Amino acid sequence: MAKDFNRFRAHPWHGLPIGDQAPKIVESYIEITPFDAVKYEIDKRTGYLRVDRPQGSSALPPTLYGFIPRTYCGDRVAELTPAANEGDRDPLDICVLSQQRIDRADIVLSARVVGGIQLLDGGEADDKIVALLASDTVFDYVKDLKNLPVAVVNRMLHYFGTYKMDMTGVHQNKIQVLGTYNAKAAHKVIQAAMEDYRDEFQQPDRRVPG
Image (spheres, rainbow, N blue to C red):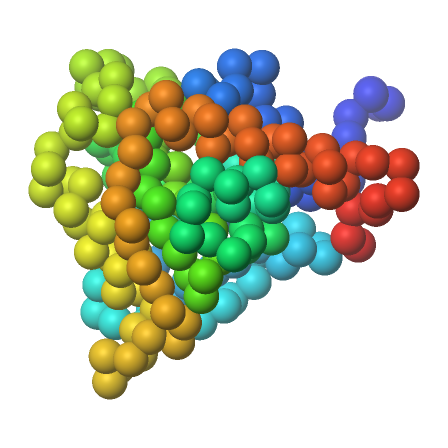
């Protein structure tokens, strides 16, 4: 029997690589799909998907949605959003577009970064990186967020502006969608999140939460 296999599942946040081509192409862990009426979120202790809550409205996620491994929204990410008091202390979120239906979560994929959405959640920087499935040649023409159809971008903006509303139309937190940014700015956000991760988890006196 082969003895060089990994006997244990890698933690999606801390155990998966971000990829050698980051910040332009990044590995991404997908938590929810455009077909999920329930929001799933990584359990930071175990690395498994946990049921968070039913989606607050009838709107479904507009893209595959998850996070970039080995990133952290700390001080450096917050500095790129002048209105932010701090980062949200989570891995950096990512929205991934694919021309084919992908209807399962708890998967890993390579994503080519084209831009991002600048968002505040209760005063915390909560950026959403926008990317394309790297192996999807249909989107080869998209080099930047401005190359995507306006309706696609507007759908994402509307979703993130309303996704924490309850059925009475009241936000659980104060969400502010500040706007969008291009691929170059998105690369800076990812780089900042990579450095925040190193500061938070890879210093001698820091420990990955278990």
